[in-house]
Length: 396
Image 1 (cartoon, rainbow, N blue to C red):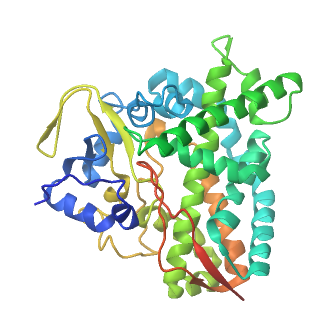
Image 2: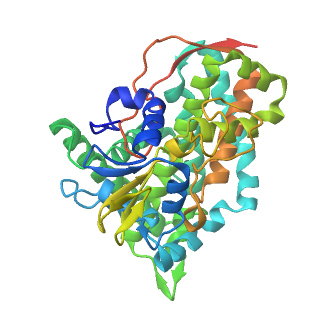
């Protein structure tokens, strides 16, 4: 039995959480973990129960995770992600047009062009950190297209993004606190300046659309727009960057799967779906318990925070046959993009970005080799992926 609290931010846990998740599913599927004693919900059926019942498990759990007292106001913790019911639906409706089928069709050609340009640059280098040279600039370009932002600022975007999602219940030392507060202030200031620029000179982008939009006869406030745009920028980066990096790490370690994809690019969508299950960038989603509840025989009091551990649910042997085996033909999706009203609005865009990115890489390179034995992993409660991924790219 597990007696000592698991620290889900410990470097050794982040490097490979899956064996410990399996242990928790077997022995203590509902258990308090560090930091802060949040309740980890580890089995598939229990995780599905949490994310499918917003009346009992409120999305304001994101505020508990991302807006502790030491942080103050955090736009990400006050965005659509942390809302339920009509407050959530009115904002989601405003942005949904930017992610509909016609918008995706318009974006595919420029995304594909960007992916091939980045792959060409990797070919010239031969060896490079995949995260900073491909996984980061590709979604940053897409965010630039959607929001009218300068995609060349992708290093600043990612640094801000890492600090936003890296908020912990207590600061991990003075440097962490200082960096986090500075990033929240800097990104908020940057987005505010973008809004002011669009007010002076409207453009054909989502920022201007949000400024013109009305809900119930009222325009969104500048604060609501800032919260919204911070969410889109960070969510658009974190999921895609980590999914691309996790995918390339897997393919570097599994040349048989790389060869299979190169032989038949039509398998790439299946690869993406299985990777979202097998090594999802979304580790968990936090929720606040709205009334006392029993989960797997454990009573969780009203007001406590639960973490629906998506990554553990996706490896649950009760739901999947041989869950630790990567299977292109599994045909059982995971829970990476959520459910219902909170199903990720950018899911199709993320899939398309990763598909275009992988197809460009697979057509350009016949092999991938790691050039460093050790990796440093993200230090965030909700997402997981390598901070850097040094690779050698073998041309086709």
